[in-house]
Length: 423
Image (cartoon, rainbow, N blue to C red; front, side):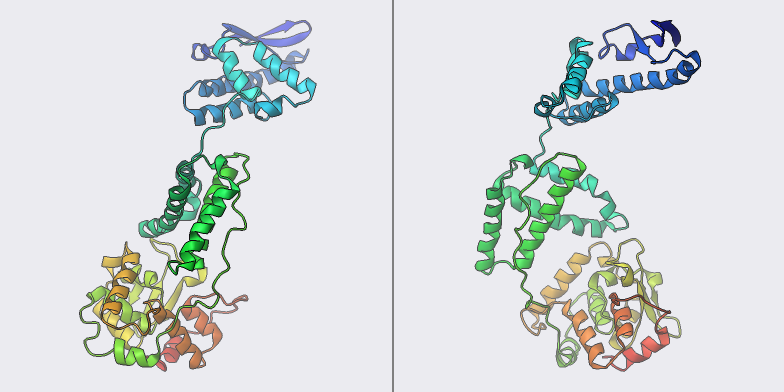
């Protein structure tokens, strides 16, 4: 790098590396350092040269047939030149001084270099297409943080409803560019759900989940990719059916049906043990499926299970807890002391298997009952027994609604209160 005092201003004169020949037609460049002080010039020279290299690199990146890479490179090159990237129509409305400065930076060049420069500073880069399906694939990358700590099975179950929601949208609208989604499109999509709800084929909550997933996916892509779009995604959800709650099994039904001799005999061993274990613990089925051998502690004075975020993600922080084992639940874990490897990576199939079995064998108290109803029954049983709210919430894995003080009940105390209601 050579410094030359020219017209009372120090400048760099340097040959252009061959690497940049396609985007810089000159064989050598003069770079003004805007100072007559040699000391200051020597300090500024490495920075000025680095900025020149940065501009060439951004220009090289723009010399591609990939629309998305070319658009990204144009934004980067504009930033290197000290401008914000703007589409051509907005560049045309800039104040005269800035507009002329942008034009001048293009006219200094020729050939492909001028074309690349124009795309960057004059807004000539075409916004790449972002179809609905491409938005979903882009979203998986942008939402990586949401899957941290999740097991492979949890990631699959997290992705499934989002993929299904986008598939439903594409089936109605086609795989159009998201910039072309109109208010009428989304109203048509909402109406398709309304028709299913009226026909009794779907519930409002199901439709709302689809709409919420679609909104989150498309808004995230628009925001993080800086597409500058305002999509018609708000005000579409249905009024929730507040009267629809999971029913609970009556204690009498559990005793006379589920715990009747041989009632669960044809259910596979691991599923059967999970069902029986749930009766006196109230754990979520997925929490049971994720238990590892060292989470099941039977050879101790107070047998218990420890629900931990090991190899998976729990629903929330308070879901991490220790639950004493009593009654039929203790006996079930003695049959399955090493956990439930069959359902370790596919907890969704657990509920499907159990619910199908219970339905086929007439073990559901009503058509609305499901395996998860046992969890709600457990809470009702604790409430009926007058168990302290703090203990109930600690056992159930629910937040307290206020700050937790102290360690809470001991394991022995929890065992004693559960023993009193054990089946």
